[in-house]
Image 1 (cartoon, helix red, strand yellow):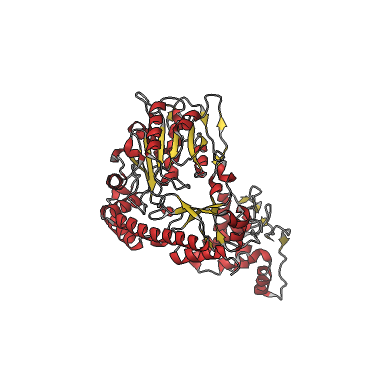
Image 2: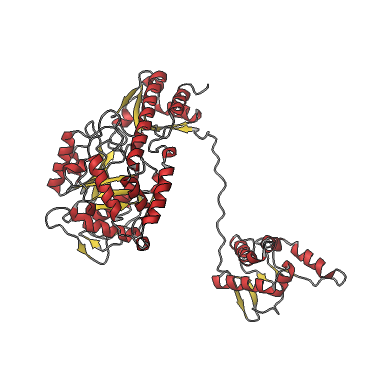
Length: 553
């Protein structure tokens, strides 16, 4: 760049460039420098040049870059010569030259021989954040919203010790790109844990470590989309390798000719090529609405099926033409029922007859308070059930650590999808969790959580009986939530929820989990709530129920 250019101050977005006049001879260079430094443009850069010498270069570049992207120095503004700006700021000319050259290389500035240095016209200002949202309603001070464990129970000391042991034990080569199935020692540990605690038929070679149940369902959906209408688990079923594949970018594609190009918050934005219909998976209703978005994102449609007193009806499932169904058979969410033996048997019969796939979400199967937990459905037919689980309720959902046990014909395809999705799960987290399982620390954590959550469930049931007489609590004594049916006199529903909000208590009504096939959820009188209690101490549970009953006290 040339220093013979006409020098001018950088203009803000609201002012034109201003030429620097030569200082009066009696003012002296210091006075002239102070006068120029007092302009708004230089004020943007002054904090960076006040830093220690070793930090000034990067800080000056950052300040100038931020001024351009924020619009405080407008596009098309001509910057002063490096010599002039260095004199104004009291720094070396080389510092300014380096900053100009760096921002020119990045595209924020443009310059030419004898043409000076200008703010590039290609720069677009960042869109300013909107005004902060204001809400007249008081934010809930306490919440019975389900799904959150008590994060204060996280075993920090055991986790820290396991972290040190895992780091000391892992060889250097183990820190490379991992096996997409998961660390072998974790899969071995999980196989023993799941067989012992949940009755799962768990061969380590069929276990895939993943980022929670959400990713497990996404992987299953990608496989279903890749198989299309072709064979799934029947004899001779095998994927056909192709150049692409629906919903995953992998190398598997079956009869389907659908390519999903994206999805946002459950809104399918797939572009569908002319061809066979998208595969369908059945979801429980009421159930977890987010599952629909997970499947839509990989090119699979979802249909809701009403959950009865024993679970979903196999005959209704058969009528949908679905290739698979996602179930929570040990403790249905949110109704709280356990699938009956008759329903379990009927669903497995459907899967065998229809070449279908059952996906078992065992989200809280370790927590049963009145008897031994009901064993996993997968143990009855490991060739027709994908078993999924995670540490989200036993340790913390923020760990994003889960697993799936896959029928043998689908293992390679699931592993390939996992590889193309994220190249495998973090190795250190896997080694750490394997250590916790192997030393018995995870079993101790499960027992600790079970004692705490049983006490909190008992406190909630007792408080409801005291402050809302006539309330009926349904569902098995398990998990992290209950269903509370309040008598009609406490309704109507909308009024009760509005009073709860004014009292600062967050609630989730049961019908909020309905997907449309269970109209009785909306038709029944009274107030029915899904009350999560695991994250609240017994004293807070009692206080919150009392506050619901007497919001003005």
